[in-house]
Image (cartoon, rainbow, N blue to C red; front, side, top):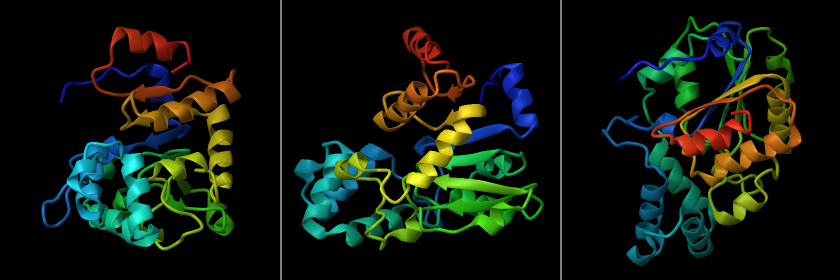
Amino acid sequence: MPEIDLPPYLISEIENGNVVLMLGAGASFGTKNAEGQSAPMAAELAKLLANKFLSPTYADKPLGWVANYTISEATLAPVQEYVASLVEGLAPSPAHKLLTTFRWRAIVTTNYDMLIEDAYAANTSAPQKLVPLLDDDQNSDAKLRDTNALPLLKLHGCITQTRNAACPLVLSADSYIDYENKRSRLFHWFRELASDRTVMVLGYSLTDPNITAILERLTQRLPNRLRYYLLTKNITPIEIRYWEKKKI
């Protein structure tokens, strides 16, 4: 891979443990389970859901709407358990293992998989102790008092909670409407962290409405926040100018 020149300020913030790391689906790209199967990206997941629960005629529709229809046809639990089966057992990549050697202010992810948890569990010399936070009913206050505690905010849910109908995975188009339901504390905490910390965003496409909506809300609510950094592939000069105006 070609080397990337990171801004000195960002490097300093990482070295001082001040950065909030936000990971999207691209951060899981290329990881495989014991059978050699990779984690499906959005378009592939839509096709898999359509073939299993609907018909191939729905395979090219947007994931959110395919998930809407599959949940309508099969109910929530079977759909979520099928999604979980596609991403469980993935082995952390060298990049996941490397990130456990740094100190972060927090890690935030919209991924459902357990790659971050497994990477930290495998590194017994990691400088921080991971504390996964999945919903508003979870009480992890005692664990977070540890000076080496590292909060992991899973904003869209986790494959360990596929039967929690009150707090479903954020997968369907309907679930995006009230995505903060049962996770309002997590989103509030993320906004608080993002208000006075540097945020580094990895693994998202700039055409992903999920991340663009999150970044836009943060920009509107926190006009005087610090600069954020987004690492992505094939960015154009027009896109650079657009995001630069938003301090990203």
